[in-house]
Length: 235
Ligand SMILES: Nc1ncnc2c1ncn2[C@@H]1O[C@H](COP(=O)(O)OP(=O)(O)OP(=O)(O)O)[C@@H](O)[C@H]1O
Ligand SMILES: [Mg+2]
Image (cartoon, rainbow, N blue to C red; front, side):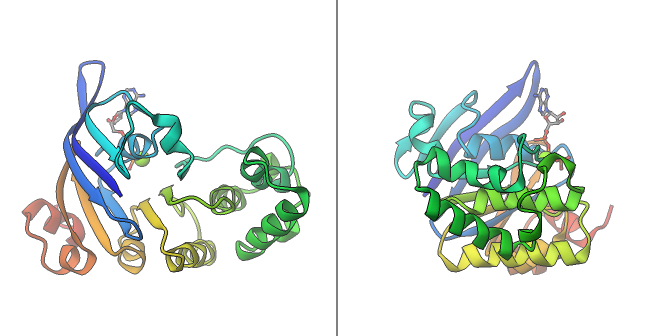
């Protein structure tokens, strides 16, 4: 379980996150919504234990993340908003996470093939990952995350700039991990996607969490006027 207690963060003299309280239960699918610049990516980096430069307390299954980031990191994987490919083939890119975890070659080959197939990129296996199209790279990035068996999968706008076919493929892959009762945290500007995938929605504005609730409540009966405006697209 993820437990954030009064998390704040500043960059220079700008406060980017303000008193964030958030609880994410195991097996929950949380969508974090909010305008550009609200602080979503900043918050995800803290949740994934990549950034420990914050004030407040973050407990991951009872572990103090600030004191033990490495212990926590191995339970979480994050796909960045603009993923970069490592040098090498698509296969090597996706196999990397399994290699460092010490799996044997045969397992790696089977598992990577399975994930590439799921994401419709098996045919690109031996291609140079850096030379793929944007949509193909995004699927490789998702594959790199899905291939490892962790407790929490974090996706920062996994389908931004993608066409409907690619969105369908990636959402299908996310549905797959949902079924395995993993915790999933996603940010998206696509409200339909949040509604399709998430069990819980958090709405952020200006570094604060305005409201957290069950997905349908947030969309149909938000408590805060700011949330209402956001989900209804009114100014
Ligand atoms: N390394 C940094 N140094 C200084 N300011 C930063 C840094 N990273 C982010 N910020 C600022 O923090 C604020 C929140 O950024 P963040 O990337 O978390 O927003 P976001 O909600 O993810 O936006 P988007 O929807 O556009 O991805 C922005 O105003 C941004 O300029
Ligand atoms: Mg962002």
